[in-house]
Structure formats: structure tokens, C-alpha cells
Length: 189
Image (cartoon, rainbow, N blue to C red; front, side, top):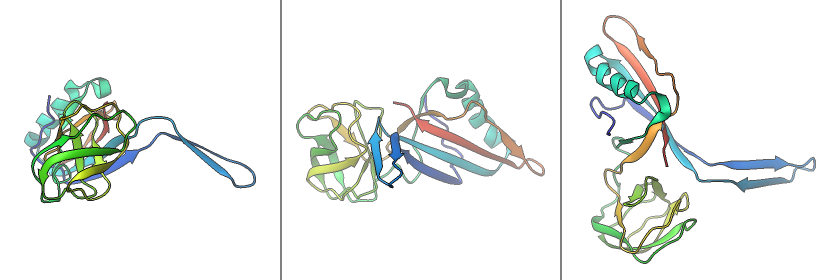
């Protein structure tokens, strides 16, 4: 099921959430340990919607019963590459969970640092952390699960698999038929 795309968000606040445990000694020494996969989350805001515009969005979220089920959402602007890449990007050789450098081939042009990608057998979305045109792509976070040789990689209109982050959804009515609405999403892996 896909989240409604009309109307588009007014603003979107994107976050990458790492699961780290940190401790500090009295002398100031700090130890940090990563204990799991990182998740994308974002807060999307709408301003000045009519009731007719809000109703399908709110009904969609009501049907999700809070965070009980996931859905696909392709956020405007950030889901498409800022580079010039064309062609079909594919994994070159199998890669294991935990890898963050992935051999790729099949495109001409460049995928830019900060662009999102998604492997065809994953629900997880990754970010390219250095410009890529050929050879090895560096991503964050590290692979959540293994990828096979020749797996197709989406780099334009990247869909995120999400669920709502809060079980309570509310909207604000100000003036006549002017609704303000904000929703928090968290990646579902």
C-alpha cells in the first residue's frame, strides 16, 4: 500500500537514527558501541489543507491503526538522484550484511553523495556518502542484509518502507476549512 502523494508535504525533516550505547568515565574517556541497524525517520508537515485534501491522508493513516503495519512512501525531491546517472545500476558480485562498500556497474554518469538508493531485495534505504560513477560505492548505514550479484539498485524515485512513529494522529483546524497536519514516519525493516 502506498501513502497518498497529493497534496505534497510542505516541509520534511529527515533523520538517520543510529542505535549507539555511550559511556563516559570520570576521567572523560568515552566509549561508544553501535548495537544495531540505523533507521531513517522523518516528520512531514502540511499547512493549510482543506478538509477534502486532509480526509484521504487521515483515512489512510487511520487504516494503519498506528504503527501496526507498513507502507511505501516516495518523498518528493529527496527520493531522486541529484546526479546525472542513467542506465540500470546493478550490484557487481555478492555482498554480505555489514558491508558498506559495494561494487556496482551498469550506469553512465554520476550518483552524488547524499542521494538515496535501495536494493531490489531490501526494504532498507541507504545513502551514498561519496560521489559514484563506477567501481565501488560507499553507503551508510552498512548493509542490513546480504545483496546478490546483479541485484538491481533504485536511485531515482526511491520508495521508503515506513510505518507511523506514533499511535496518536491529530490535526489542527484554524479558521474556516484550514487544516494543519504533521505526521512522523519511521523506517520499517
